Image (cartoon, rainbow, N blue to C red; front, side):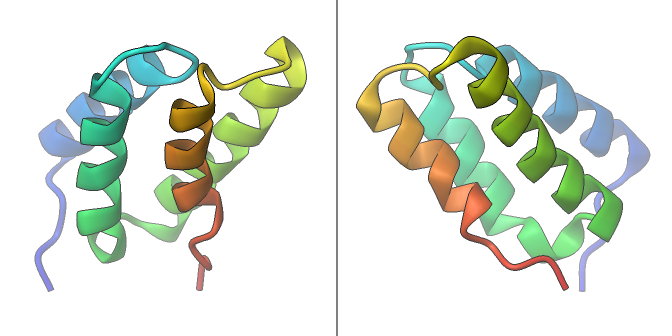
Length: 81
């Protein structure tokens, strides 16, 4: 199993937070990268991604366009072990 380095973890978190709530193609690119590397993230990071998506939607009422919401929900559907 490949481990995400601290630098990669920081960059992905920044990209994730930048993309969350935006209406742009970058949402699918970030979600795809996170899902492709899901098992390489710590359980803490996996839970953080899911919690921040839920919190953002509660706070702002949406996650972008419907296509963006579909992308973010792919992460919410992942089961954290």
